[in-house]
Image 1 (tube, rainbow, N blue to C red):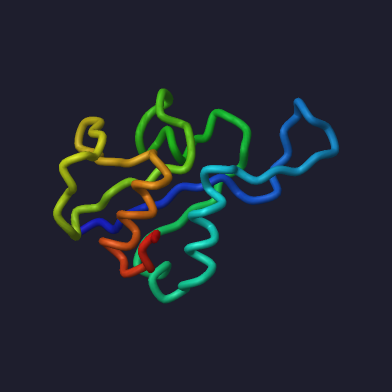
Image 2: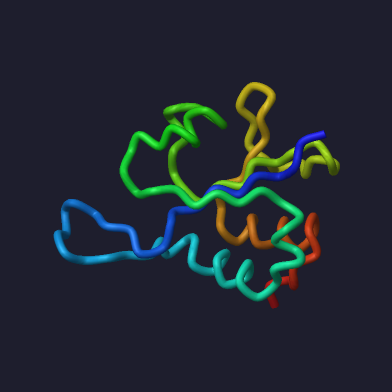
Length: 114
């Protein structure tokens, strides 16, 4: 059985196009807030925070080189798959932030978005 895997950009990353500045991912920030507020639920999935530069080898290994945008929730086989997931070979994943938040609530017991 495989667990769900959540891949996010690490907070405070640098972008060489903007020397001396640090950034957060606007799509990952709401997910990070949810994770920070519920460490018990967060322990139910595998979370990896990745550096900004591409190629992102962790994502390539998990999906492929064409799907390196983050955040991404890669669904394991411990629970039934929702009908609206993207599929790549035998991998099933979601990239939409709102949908990731919904699935974290449904699959891992996080609070729901109101």
